[in-house]
Length: 260
Image 1 (cartoon, helix red, strand yellow):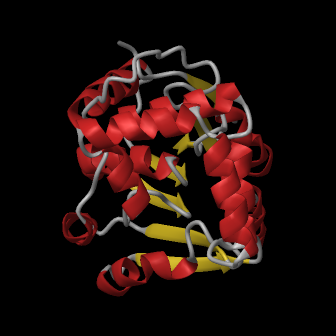
Image 2: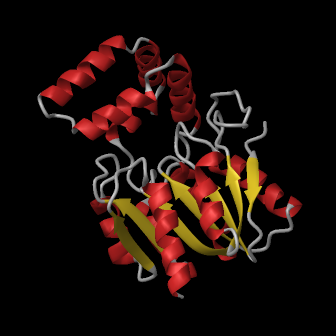
């Protein structure tokens, strides 16, 4: 069972491994290749069920399985040390990689990362057989859920941007299938904030959190506690929402590169 599919960009002296969000592919990091390709050689991964990754089983895989295959990738590419970037759901893969290879990681970029604090909706959907069955029925019989989301938006119990994102993620059978399989298969990629804080402090790894000022999915305050506890961590808030954070972060890093 292969979990590793990637595209290589750039010719920089440092290696950067990139993980996209749900519903995307490695292509979302093309702006990073254009902006930072002379600084980094970028390996942009396709998550399982996305892009060119033909992984088809929704059986949950463990962190150990991911780390074993990633170690094989590092050996094949003769990579000694590297940096990582993870956006949204890709944050779970970035954090699983961090846990397994902390001593080899130079820098961590986390963009509105999932996995720092798990959504109670996600926990409810995937944690046991009964809830997963209900989630499966719901995701494939989505018309009532769409109506509920629209009603919640009208009565202002859901922010309009969150509602638009949810509706976009579920507006076709292909997207619903991808969301279902991803949520189920990725459910063991879970992280203890206390353990993450200890690991980052032990290894003194620089970590930058990039958060969108208008992001209601992953608001900036999500990472406050971790930043307060890790001296090498910093938080940068960019004037954008969730979906444009990868592009805005690339532009920010390019400006910093030009100023250096």
